[in-house]
Image (cartoon, rainbow, N blue to C red):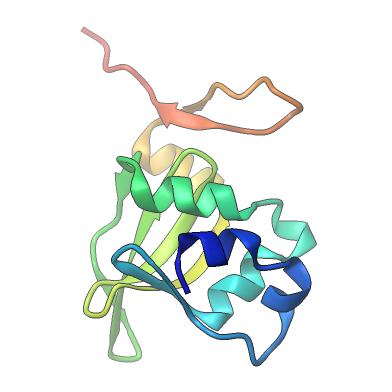
Length: 125
């Protein structure tokens, strides 16, 4: 399945436990990540995740090993994705957290319909 297949995949289909992985560019979005995208309390959507994957990130964390599996966080404008660098699997997605805001020195510039949008703060000269 491609980017268009991912965009037109309904929330009902993404929420199923037996949903298939989706290849989007060089990344593969896992079942777990798709389930997390459609959760109502996370307040992120597919476009936030795609924006995160295909634009320059606001920040990336160092590679961490948990249970022998490597992963790093990629912080975008509205979403943070956790990616396995060995096979480019998008493991999970979440909104940008306060820890990410502090760590990467981000500010909120979103004014449209209360949607938060974060960008890097300009360095002081």
